[in-house]
Length: 210
Image (tube, rainbow, N blue to C red; front, side):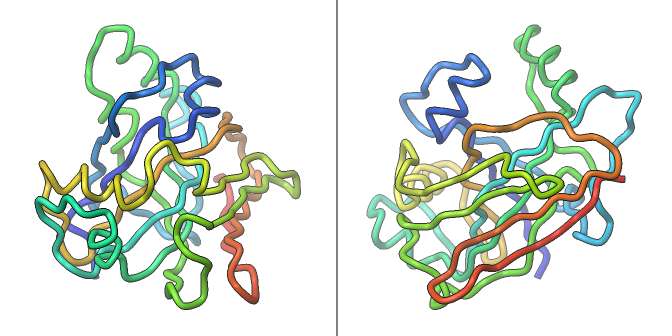
């Protein structure tokens, strides 16, 4: 099922906020990508190089299986999550920096075609509790990012509740929960590997920078 929207959280890990020189938010910050932002793993990471650098941001991503609207109970909000994967929230960083300097919105840098790549969905029964998830991103065999949901500034349930106050989460929607520290620019022909730790096995997805 194609999502009606992809909701992305910003600065949910303190170490990532610090590495980009941003303040820690007092409440969750969100933006959205349209369905046209989705690309397949086999398509690889593609962008118009004349627009400047493209940065990787590996994030735990949630599939919403039940409508969530105006929810205030984090435990109930978690019941709307049907499956989990890892995704790449790709950012045209030079464009984003220019937009931020002008106090303009980030869509040109964050919501372009191909700016979201997701792995296959993993059932919750295969994973630890959502607040105990661990994952990492490797590029050409070297670890670049390591994420632990216990380090989120807001719990996943709190994030879902916050989103639902202003935007109804529909069945099939995707929520990207934010990225840990270690983001950086991508280079042609690099091999990316996202690794999600399960209860009994690791789940891995690979893609290539075109």
